[in-house]
Image (cartoon, rainbow, N blue to C red):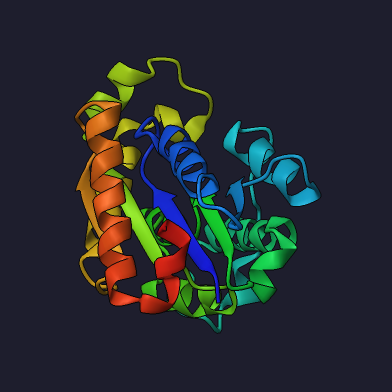
Length: 223
């Protein structure tokens, strides 16, 4: 099997920068096929729905009676929005993820952990989130680029949607990221991303090398 890496974090934490640097690093290895993707993908049907919701163009209005048997579903609109994002992951992920070859590397800019963190921050049921995303290919390593929300705003003062403008919500998201990473096991790793790009990149590489040291079957991908 190949390798699936996910880079997670709140806004302006460096996900795009560092997922691209990792992509370049793996492309230096002869014979390795590297595919980077970023979620959500807004160009699809569900992506347009997600973007419209984030920008406040529409909201989910559901009759509570339709889900009254699920007692934990106190906010059905948020559950439906989460389902919309799950469908986006399913329809937009590279097809090769389902049939990885020995020399395939996939790098995700946001993946499953973002669903957990943002879903928990919205008050969604933890067990429901975990069960719902078990159908997706599971990452070999997920790295959280952790920065304070205040630093996020310093790095990128302009805000693009309702989530990015809500400081209190972003603080909850960060707390939920840290909580979920503390419980999901050794393949979920938190690193301090407050330093320079070079410092953070080397921390990421250290995490990748440590993971590969535990997986001899992946050693050829870093030769």
